[in-house]
Image 1 (tube, rainbow, N blue to C red):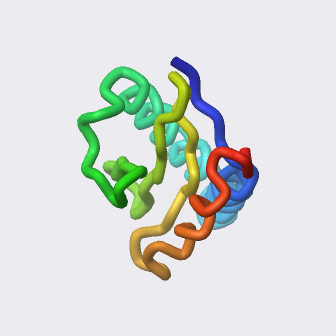
Image 2 (tube, rainbow, N blue to C red; image 1 turned 60 degrees about the vertical axis):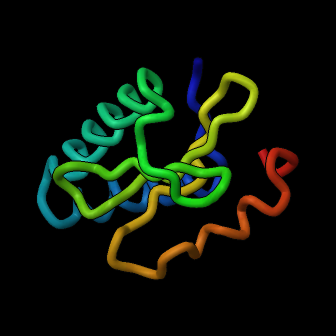
Image 3 (cartoon, helix red, strand yellow; image 1 turned 180 degrees about the vertical axis):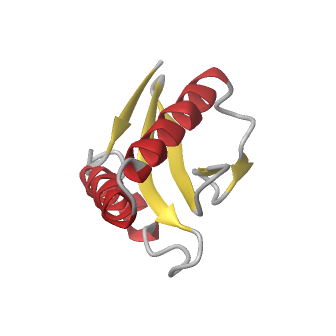
Length: 103
């Protein structure tokens, strides 16, 4: 199984890494490492994470206030959002409207 970030989620990831690196040199790299560790767990156990909607799941990062919103489609995991837990909940929900056409 492989992972693919949709464009909006990829931008969110880059923005979060940049933000954390501006706060403290290397902190963005730590954030990215935690995202990679969480992705490895998602790939190993895609069904273990809590359902967020009928078609998505939410993997919570341990050290940073972020979640990875993802869905599984045709033996591939799609990351739909890299979402901060204390900001607008479900702002990303419209990304599902055209799934998988928007990938």
